[in-house]
Length: 474
Image (cartoon, rainbow, N blue to C red; front, side, top):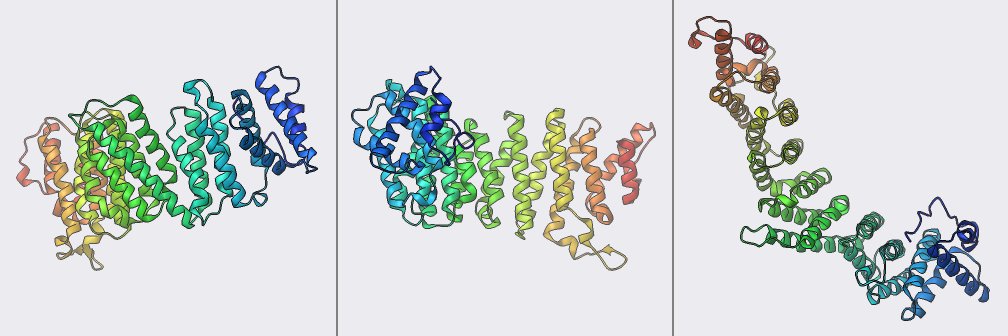
């Protein structure tokens, strides 16, 4: 029986046993009868010791029952105890449970999980394990945030179940890991927990690289699934990892990405994107070259799925933006390479070409500005500025599109023309200094399209005329 989400069902203002009896006493379901029986028996224990029937008393009595009867409990009793404890524990005030008491309770539950055969052997079912995992997550939150020994056993068990084959158990463990990471804050325990997660990721990425090796016989489905599950754990907790852990995780992800493992690609991209969002530019800079090269290689491969290719293009754009906004000049080196790789998508089907066009427009609007290369009130061209690395990048980008036009057997499509229009507007007064080849080619096509003879050597349009030619061609 899956434990109910008791946040909105049960409350700590009245006896939990009475609430359960009111809710389930008329039910004929065996699991409800067992649950009510466990609640009633636990209340009798509490009352026999003249203790108040509070959530804490129920919690303490239930843990005591499990501890004293581990070897004699049948599966139905274990299931009922797990459900009851998962109902009671969220109602226990945090201040009521000492760190030592929480650690003791964790030891009892972990001991039970280790002793009892799991569902594959016909004993503990998914709902029972899930309920205990939920309880472990709450109990870890009660532990001393400055004492790793207090937290370690519970946290390690959550990590173990975070790659479980059963989706409900796995999801519960992953949710608990995220919750406890949030509660750790910047404590010393958070660093230890981060190292444990990195260890898990490193272990599974090593396996993933092995599975991706050309000579390696395809690994088992379970092995692939474990890798995917570990990558799923990572993404939501990246903001809570230390800078050093994120650096190491990023290096592992880049290594796996370079292995050309298509099975894990989207998960790799998701996690790199999460690190990009959560980290300072210095972390990205360490592996920027390898990441950009791997992303470009992925974008250029026609065999890769369209959605992943576009995701890779978005990631590459994000890295350029991160470097640019962080004042790291190396973005100038990568911008033409990224633009060139994405520009190849403009001639693909519409579902790829349109998003690629939008990505390129954002890159051009964000990183190309002809006004930077002008000086004085008259906005004359600054000869010194035209020799800087940023202008060299602009010329390299223009050359990309010039080569695209020259190698085309027909007129450029709407997406290419839209990109050129945006670029011309951004270049403004320096257009003639870096895009003359594009202008001449567009002029040639315009003359041919109008049926007239032409001689491109005599065509010298101003920026305004270039825009006019572009719009007329479009």
